[in-house]
Length: 140
Image 1 (cartoon, rainbow, N blue to C red):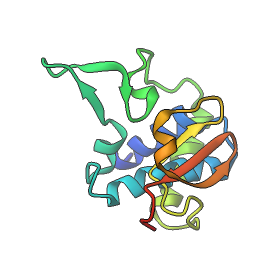
Image 2: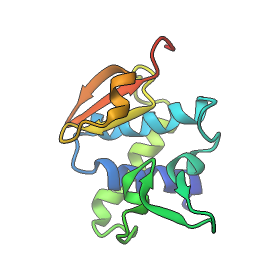
Image 3: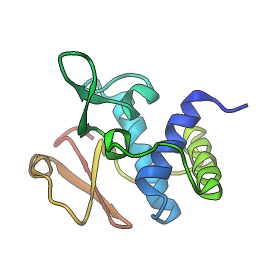
């Protein structure tokens, strides 16, 4: 039986980091859990993964989600089931504490292909694969 929390994490790994090395997939998952633990974000895994800006009628605004895959207008059904099963196993490992903290409290990350404005106000904690990881300054 598939657990809803694991499904949220596995989908996020799959769509955000399936092209990354294992430790990059772990790191992306650790960011989600760090957000759950941070008072600035929702306190449940799926609420963090699916966090989005909404218009007045309550509909998600395209490209205004915390994790880009969730509101990019594309299908959210995995096509590569081997990669999805792998993501699910990584999610389990992270939830059960199999991996050490790779991101040192990071609550943010971005690809090295972009330079978001918010990164200037955060402290860089790690570079893993092609992602840069950040946390709120002076909070670790």
